[in-house]
Image (tube, rainbow, N blue to C red; front, side, top):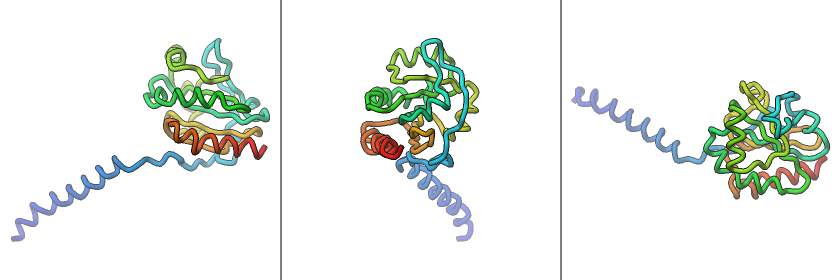
Length: 181
């Protein structure tokens, strides 16, 4: 009888572990991840532009009196391709500036990506080595930030923007930032 438990116990433990691991695959991931930068000034970084077609945004741009939306993306990011139509729609919202931050990507690859899916950005900066992303608290691409007119981060969204996210989270965050200059 005791020998039987020696064989059953490891199988049962493995089954329990497998159950919890598989269950975590189907639970929705948290998209609103708290950031230490929320309600604080965004990092004051001077970054290079993507290319000659797109100047880089600066700390002064982020504190120029208008709400800014900063989207972190890369050409190698599949979800970035999925959210492209929502970014195009977002760029049409009055009173905001759209800025792109290219994370760890080759400029020619990022430009080809934007030429293919559309370029909704007013200005685009490069984060060649990922240090700027660390300063911004980026977990991974894509991520989107709402910055008020004084350069204070008011909202952070991790993951691709869907129509639902656009209407239920991002637009309200932009409206709130516009209402509280």
